Length: 323
Ligand code: FO1
Image 1 (cartoon, rainbow, N blue to C red):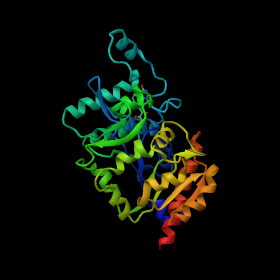
Image 2 (tube, rainbow, N blue to C red):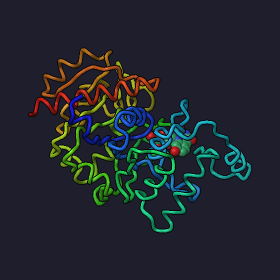
Image 3 (spheres, rainbow, N blue to C red):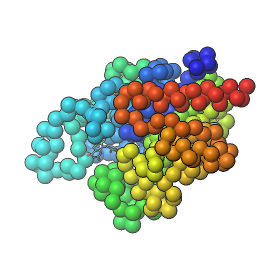
Image 4 (tube, protein in one colour):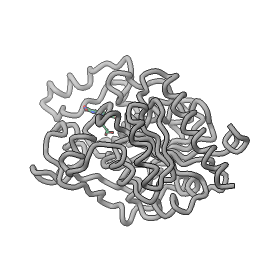
């Protein structure tokens, strides 16, 4: 790596589980030089609590607390609260573990006391011993609404309650037109010392688009001197987890890296596809994008660090070719 990347800051745009794995790899190589701007379109109020699933997935993953199987919530969890809730006949379609409950209660208390989501997230990150900066995309409410053949569903009603079964017609990000970027996201986006902006392999439609829908983000990406690199969330036409391919089919989009590149359109300088999709590198280059193949399936910590290194080497080469 050149000096620039060894010292430069990294901004990652991230949703939940898939994106958090790469964020962890980036954290291991960049630590406090990393800012992760996280989707808050999935946030909702449930049982009187402010739930911020993607922020928590990133916090828990980087802190080594995440459940490795589920991908969300905490490892070594117990479910007494849910069992007691069930006895009372209360809503129990959204599982809140006993340990996980603490973050929702504390966040809700502090937000009700007038603190911003950024401030609460910053403090929780510090308490969990994180050196990377985990920041919500906005302190204003943006709520993803999934327009389906069964009506307009708030994100968690579509994703968890209906288990992504309804057919998606389109997706709206309510509040995105007026929401301001969080201060730290805005500062990272305009940081002259950025070595790279990384679009993590999260669901482009549900998890990355909320960030891109905020006013000023696409313009900021285009204006940044740092290369913008996406990691495709697809491997051989399949997503590792989640409904990306189902949604692409419903929106009549081919499930391949070219579609992902087209979806991100003008904001990208480069894209990383999986080694299994090496054949798409040529067509991607023909679209005018820099592209390379790497192992994007992240099972172990060393897979995550390995992919993070590939991303930063790519950024390094793109930076060098500009000078
Ligand atoms: N996902 C589920 O599929 N079922 C759940 O019951 C569930 C509970 C849950 C609680 C806290 C939390 O932070 C996340 C939770 N998730 C659950 C995951 C989450 O809703 C989605 O994975 C994300 O919003 C998509 O990135």
